[in-house]
Length: 98
Image (cartoon, rainbow, N blue to C red; front, side):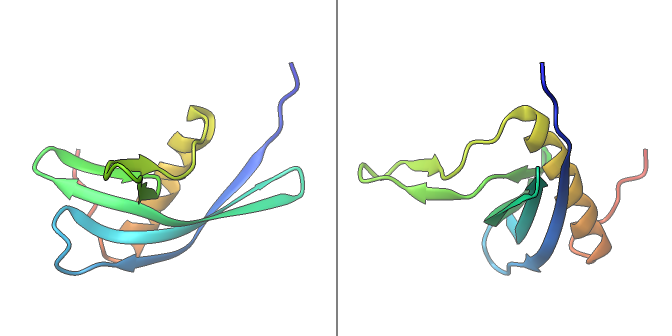
């Protein structure tokens, strides 16, 4: 099985005001095998249950919210970690003491 490495960078994390659970939007670049993919609108969301990073969504013709891009777990998890770290560095999130 062939493997490749990826470089994931949060290019920008922008706070969002008065948007309920949505705290920020991020632009993320993923570089694999010399090809860069940029994902705009990665969401940083939080509620009483915790904080999460979700991929961008769009509203389908039937009104349902759908994920705009599908990433394998091998990329989605590390991307979430990078975005969380960038949001902490930008002061949007506060690191929780363990």
